Length: 315
Image 1 (cartoon, rainbow, N blue to C red):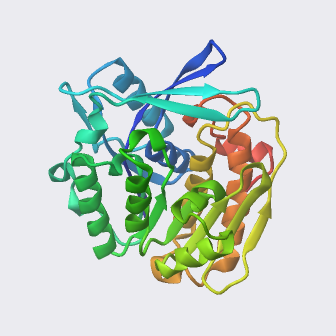
Image 2 (cartoon, rainbow, N blue to C red):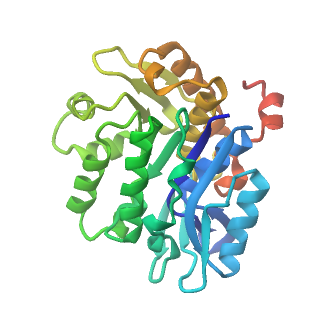
């Protein structure tokens, strides 16, 4: 059975609305995506590193409860589990600040990655947060190289966090470097405008395909999602109206749901480009899942279950 291998940060989201503490939730984009895939009944594994602390215990307990394989989540007493402070406004939109002074996830080493886990028809997913200059970046480079050599579907969600980088230029150039040749690139319009500044959206999309990306997944928030392929008309899926409480993790629910569908049908890397009908179906499903995720606080804890989706007649 094919699986997701997600690599990167696993952390605690400390969510506040105004001065009110809503709660502390396990999060981190790669952990969120791994959880979404597992919740939807597919095999899912996370590669990460957390601290041997209370925050780390919450992360592990949450991931295990959702069905994520955490055998490759390393626990260390030398570093701390990252805490992200999430401020949510009245419209459910959020801003992030991070405590990364001794972040365990930045110390994931390539020697700690088991290359035998990467199998054909698996999906490999990563983001940009742990691509800052660190041991973790080298681990990501190593894992990505293995994934490409073994023919895995490669999924990249830059998930830009500007305050973690030494400069915007460093972030931009890193994203442009790592997006080359990926099969699924998920971004927002704002992120795409940052990656390719001072040109039109259409020109930026063309730049994406010059980097040999197979599918561009353009998340448009409450306006829905658009799928692009080189030299093809875009596939547009309209947004779903819901009462938004917190948008944290919505993008992870989107890409996680699409990956879950890819795994469910066993779509291989070499058939991905010719599967526009299926990708439209998957994106329509994922758009509904992501909308439901916005109706509750937190990321992982807000993700709808298969039972909830069945009640909502989403399949």
